[in-house]
Length: 193
Ligand SMILES: [Zn+2]
Image 1 (tube, protein in one colour):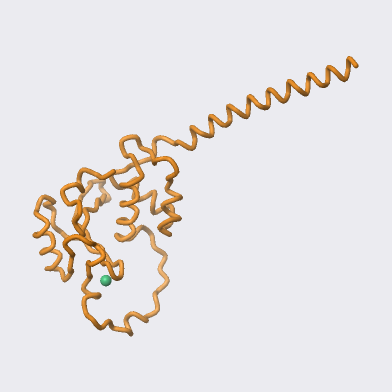
Image 2 (cartoon, protein in one colour; image 1 turned 180 degrees about the vertical axis):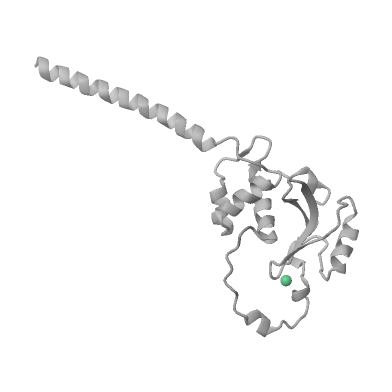
């Protein structure tokens, strides 16, 4: 399932990402992911109707190479040289506790939600949950929920699992009633014997 906002750029190596400002306003921007290092960027451009060639040129102006089709060929400014600065690459990462998803994570989660979440019904397709996306992408579950709720997918309004559990509880109740009846019958037989 693909969102309407993405259809005009289907097959392109960039995407349209949806952002929600603190005031609740939803804004959409062109965004791209580097195929070499997963760095990501967004264009300030607000007109989403410009043709793909213009989009790629605008990415070019901020130092990015965005491929015509295959996002794996996108390159951020750091990944375009043949020689990479080994000292920069080897620099130890500062342990920072992330407070929200990165744009790269928003992309990854958004792509899964496009495929497995029905925003009209407010539910995942069978077998899919925030938890599963979290596990598959190795992204905190809270971030998955955040991307879903702040993006166009929205809150979960229907739970297949819950429906299944209710049905199961009904079956169990029936089994318990049946078991009780058999215990009582056995008890009666013992007493009358
Ligand atoms: Zn890169």
